[in-house]
Image (tube, rainbow, N blue to C red):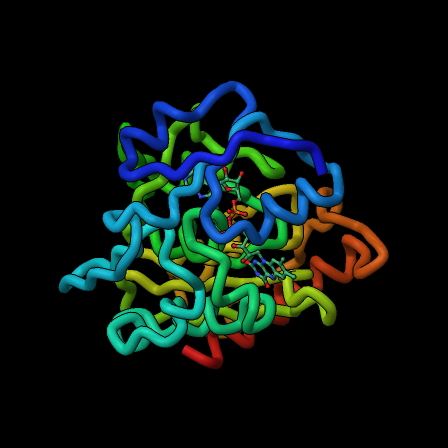
Length: 261
Ligand SMILES: Cc1cc2nc3c(=O)[nH]c(=O)nc-3n(C[C@H](O)[C@H](O)[C@H](O)COP(=O)(O)OP(=O)(O)OC[C@H]3O[C@@H](n4cnc5c(N)ncnc54)[C@H](O)[C@@H]3O)c2cc1C
């Protein structure tokens, strides 16, 4: 591991100011530390944001659930308020990795990293989330740009994520048996006016399947998608699953999610 400067930021302003062309924020360190150790990344400056109080916590209103960026997956999973307002979000958090990962990994780190197999990006897309940063508000549909790529600018810090409370929702994941990352994950959310079906694990980045979402917006039942064909030509193919298999998982897990709603 290469040496780096370690900084502890007291607030968002300081964290952003300390960032440089070759720096990373340290939330739970679940991606950044292994990346450093394995030599996949080198940073000149590591800026610890864990002690910024404003970045942690959960707030629930009539319409939204807002989760601070450094809130850990275990806190979301065990929150009675989240379990009541958006049970599928608590379930998603409780199914991430293992106990160690859930007790260190954070919402902000997960979405800033935008791993193609991460669970939270699909919740953001399906639940019309707004990403609040130290500079602006970004709609989830404009946030996830591509594999490990987001709309964040250098030094821009996620402060919280605001999820819209749906009428019904469910998250179904076909997990990698070792890491629990999604080989395919389907987050289905039925809002008053539309249904969003967001898919993770299948392509280079999370996406909303427009055809499935439209069909379910018109008729919220399995019969609406029974004869649907999934185009798997752009889907990931690796040692875990072929693109074709991932395509079939998208449909199978969407049906499971409808059943579970
Ligand atoms: C073994 C293992 C299994 C896992 N399984 C799953 C799984 O099943 N599902 C799943 O969704 N995820 C999974 N993860 C990912 C995990 O949930 C973490 O959320 C993810 O690794 C990011 O870690 P972190 O939150 O500690 O962020 P860090 O590692 O501290 O940071 C990661 C990156 O995000 C940036 N960052 C962090 N916080 C912010 C912020 N507030 N604003 C801007 N940028 C920020 C940092 O600069 C860095 O580049 C797994 C990870 C491991 C190691």
